[in-house]
Structures are given as C-alpha cells and as structure tokens.
Image (cartoon, rainbow, N blue to C red; front, top):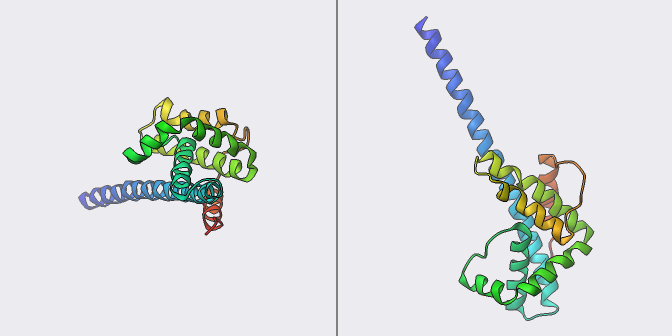
Length: 167
C-alpha cells in the first residue's frame, strides 16, 4: 500500500512539474513571437525613417515609436533624452501607423496575444493589461472586434512579419 501512495505522489508531482514547464515554455514562445514583431516593426520603421532623416536619428525614432506602441520604456538614458526632446514627433509618427492596414492587423493581434503574459505570470494590474490596448485604440491602430488570436496562428503571423522585414 505504501508503494501505491508513493507512486501516486510521484505521478502527481510529475504532472504538476510538466504542467508548470509547459506553461513556462508557452510564455517564452509567446514572448519570442512578440519580440519578433517588435524587431520587424523597428526595422521597417528605421528603413522608412532613413529616407527622411539621418541614420542615427531614424534609428532612435523607430525605437521610440516601437516603444510607444508597446508601452515600453526607453532602454537607456540616451533613448530617454530622445523621447523627451521629440515627444510630439513620436506621437505623430505613431498616429501615422494607423494608415498601414497590415501593420495595424499585426499590432492588434500582437497586443491581444501579449495581454495574457501578465495574467499567466500573476503580475497583472489593470494598467499593465489595458494600457497597451488603450494606447493602440487612441492612436487609431487597434482594429476593433475580432477574436483573440490562436497561439499557432499568432506564431505564424509573427514569424512571417519578422522574416519579411526589409534587409
């Protein structure tokens, strides 16, 4: 009888361990897909902005617009300074993204998919959950309605978006 109890305890422990590992892998895969969209967007914007601005400025602007869309903070002091000095331009360029239908679709699906990460990590607040969605809505980027993306189709969308970025 004791062997049966030990066996059941081991099986139960393995079940919960595999489940926790599967959740971790799922979240890592989801974050990688979101990161692919971020990089794909940054590269597209940098190429576009390089036609109007010098290279370094175009890179900062592309990063700042990408950060604005994803509600991310600047990565360093130089990027923070750029944000402070060019807030109006960043907002204008972010608003201009609303005219790019494919990009709006990709960003809408990405923000929807990304919204589950804080909940899955038990680190959600209303702000972390809705700020990116509301921001896209305010900029006219969010496509209203539609279903939450299925993970496999989101991975495919993110991969295709990343792979088709300008070189």
